[in-house]
Image (cartoon, rainbow, N blue to C red; front, side):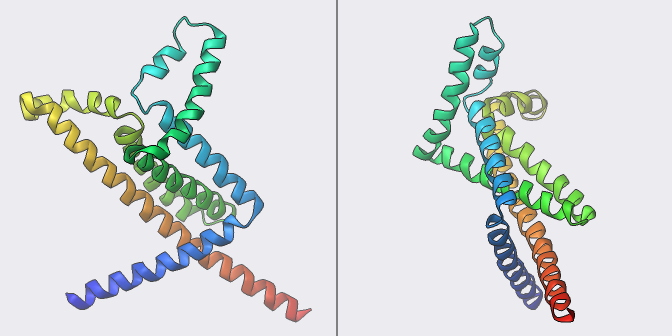
Length: 206
């Protein structure tokens, strides 16, 4: 049992290192760097928009003027930078980075015809993103969604139970996204290494 655990940990460590190498390589490529930056901005913006519940969403589609709506959307950009000031905001930033890395790796694996791995990664990453949105992007939304179900199970303790489950969802979101990044990063490393080998072999042949 100990040997098996040691083997799994060693394998995870190695694949993580390979994934980091491939991520570093892709981030040095302009198109994948752009994909990462755009994805990071979008995820961070959406999570920051719903950070305080659905109030911004309701206000955006209320009867306020167009100028006020633009001001609201601009204020969210400032809220994105405010995430650096507290632990909750840092979790949002970390989650956004993982989601952006997932998108970048998905684009790479899909474009290199690793569609099966891309679909698996998209499925796992999507679940992680949903958990992250419910737990971090819109915590009040998540609690409101969970409370009716938990009321039947936990009775008056439903709200407390929903808050506890929200914390569990945060952990699950990070675990799923980290797993997805490592898996897709490892696949990307193999693809990159294979392509480089073929290029060298072709160059020598010529």
